[in-house]
Length: 114
Image (cartoon, rainbow, N blue to C red):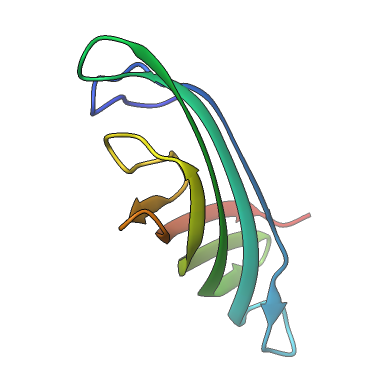
């Protein structure tokens, strides 16, 4: 779901598995988060063919999490090592890959704690 800014008609999925180590007595504060991500997509190539893309990465993320009453605001960035068959765009709907091995991610999450 979302906006296809590259006009490649992507169809597939992304799975991310991680664990946060928070360095604060409460749930608000700085954290580090080792993460594994797997991306599997089919998309339109420049030559018109429908091509698969399967990528994996292991990343080290750092961030800060605020909890205000029941609302959560989380900002993070990470770097890691990736492998698989890359696409022409080097974008895998959950991380960006450079040089065929370096992966980057960043984001802001909003949520509700329960």
